[in-house]
Image (tube, rainbow, N blue to C red):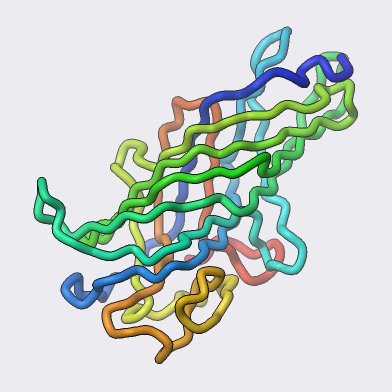
Length: 252
């Protein structure tokens, strides 16, 4: 079976974020911008991908592999520009949208090959992967996103499948219409367990927590609190804000 699947391409998948419940104290009227920044995420149980083989399609559970030196982070998404809130023409709701780019993806799974051999698959970013996120001030404060992920899946040993490239069309709308978020400030950053934080002065887009005093009033940082997915797609990626320690649980 060596390199048998080198030209096969998976074409659709869906992403999901699940997390924790937090009280949101932010006043929608005080928030004018979400600062450009980066979301550092970790993969949760329930993540999986369906892989087509000549003998049939199999579902491979996936787990995150922490990126060296970055706590429990295995997935990185960047918002390169500020998201500016304004009234939606159709609903009057305060919304903002901005482009996003997947900067890193590091997943791994194991399965039994057709010859009974133990197989592993590693999934990493395979090319520029961009999309859009739309924020709503609510209440409740929600967001939806959609983007295309170009990835490479490498099988080991090669008899398990060689390598495939894939292009996944992701969205987080699911059955609940998206996810929820908190604004920091005025909400504090949750600390159970400690988040993986990158702190820097505004407008550094690599930060997820900007230094107080470096940005104008009404500007906030974005942290996810929960999301759901369409489980009918050929893959599911369940993530939460990443913990600062390797192996750390999702923040509560």
